[in-house]
Length: 153
Image (cartoon, rainbow, N blue to C red; front, top):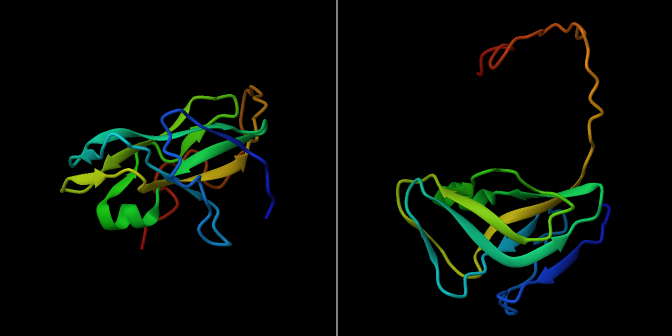
């Protein structure tokens, strides 16, 4: 694994008792993000979305992005996921890291202060050099859309 230094700022409303993002196992690709809700929990009715603050800002190195991804246990057990998964944090953004959660279950959910709500994955960025063409190369698939390569079994 490659390590890249990412500067992190605890914002004034961040609870110093909350752990910083952390990798929970040696092989984890994502660091857990926690909800910073010192004024109380957020109730998430079925189908509702909410922006959950983390109280943190990041300085992501040029050539990288941070991806906010759902936590699989939260999605499976409670139907809570990241609405714009994966959410992208660009290297030039310096505001608070927020997590857009959505409740896909049929029961209300409560997000409490300190809850692990998402994972943060640092990834290299490859930018396209767009080149306009008159025609595109042929493939076996061609212009076939969703489901064009066969039925799911």
